[in-house]
Length: 410
Figure 1 (spheres, rainbow, N blue to C red):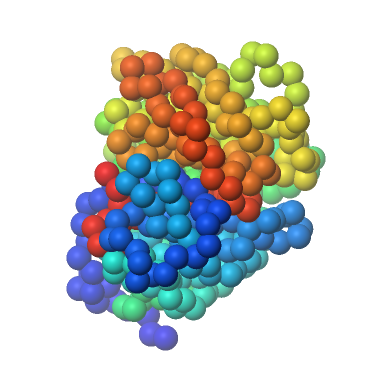
Figure 2: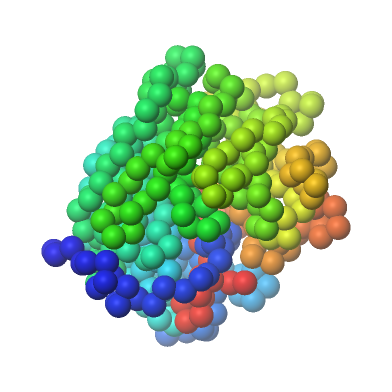
């Protein structure tokens, strides 16, 4: 395969300004539907853990037809893969990519217009172990991947047919390991989203207690530490994921090891984060071990949501009580948070959750109890209420909703 030039990459795909991937959904218990029967509408892609080492019960990536009200899911296709633990699409919405947790590669797929069915385009090595997250850069030229167990961030070119070229750059992340004896043995990046203006890759690193700010050369794919390369956290914080406010200069991390949520001021010009506040992500009544999971900001910017996973890490069963999502109100003045309350996810280990693009629903993926639970979001106070829709699936860890003919919902 030949690597495209930047000019070729731009000519092959019109780069458009689209919202961040709308994630949410569930797995149908029904038999596979015929693609010919499928209405043109919403497709849900569900990634899962599959391997015995992770006690995975999933099958790979499953493609589902979703009804307009979100309550009916029909299985269209199963792509059998090992641990497709996070999914992303390019900006034309024609290609889907998956990292494979505990392995060393990322895979690529063509999305069929109308049906949303996937056709494999091959895979590429990521230059490291246990790729945990991925993101397509704003120019639609490169895929950025976090190699969680190797402490590196990789960039791979997107080729003309949507497949991936070999790694063009691999950036090790510096820093001394934190004090946790088993979880902080070295750098462990877990998230590589772009900042709202697309100028920086922001990387929470659980292993060295830093949040890094990187830059990407959109011509060469070279990654570099930014002018303000990192902000340090408290020791043994373990920052995991970050979410930016939709219109104010603030960002929020969920911190895995301490189960906290940290508020940062974001200086887009310098690519700099400054900590403002740290709060527990768990309820004051939580006395057992817990690990932070996911974080999201409501589309209107009024609330922040974080998930809490019971137990001391993936090797523990979690529970027995259901885990929670914490709701926090955002101060429009200084971006700081005030707790609103905690809601049971009605399951165990919500490694992933997301809000619908309109902010009216939240989808909690309970990895250990093999369910995705759908909640209504109160637009006034941000609180969550179960809709009664509980969809069963094996070890769900990422869900992506897409309109194959019209982009993401919202």
